[in-house]
Length: 126
Image (tube, rainbow, N blue to C red):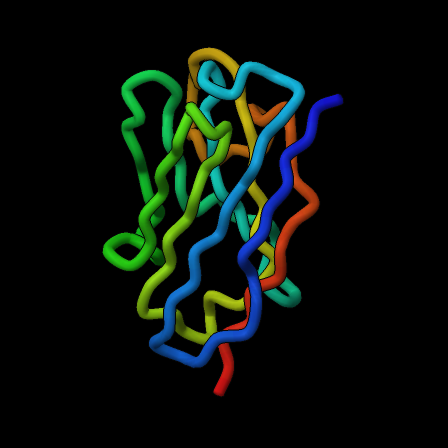
């Protein structure tokens, strides 16, 4: 049974940090590209961070570049999202997703992703 399980969300003050985890099972994690998406209140789902399988090259969208870092530990079948300098606009539900093979387009396109987690809530508020 395929599963992606996010954890690590919660309530944090502006300027604070959180580290999200995405634990995978039921598929060959190391051959899948991983991305984090988020959906803020009243907004659509947006891709924010991506890490490839193999060479682990990463991309972050402009709104989180320099503040968020994506990583993965293939030995643990787990991906991470370190979030620093959080602001209210980072509030939302954060999802991890897994895409097989080579992505032939924008890696922040949900269409490419086969497996999705259930999401974890991140709230940035004083």
